[in-house]
Image (tube, rainbow, N blue to C red; front, side, top):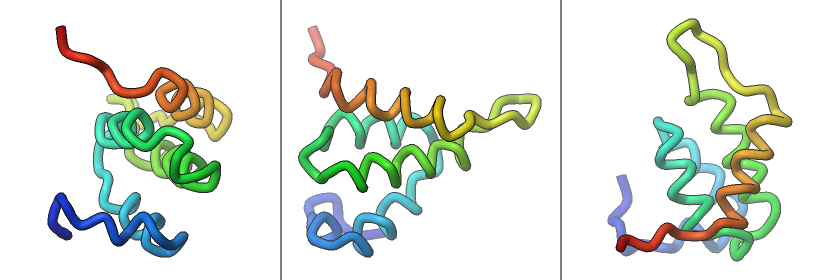
Amino acid sequence: MPRRDDTSWQRTAEGQAEHVKGYTHWLAIEGSARKYGFSLGHEFLVLLAKRLTVVDVDKDGATPDAATAWRRVEGWARQGQKVAA
């Protein structure tokens, strides 16, 4: 796993794709969408939405469809980071 302060993955589409593959929980995807929002571009959000359809598995095995995953990722990106009170 790359160091947390290593941001070289952000520079290329391939790096972003490889980085997103490392997300194994929907909370990681939410955090990334909130942190980077639209700053890494539309395609990065698409990668996050696609990954969400893989890792967000309900107890019954159901996963979100592409449209649902996109709405969630886009919503998180628009909301931005949460501020602790």
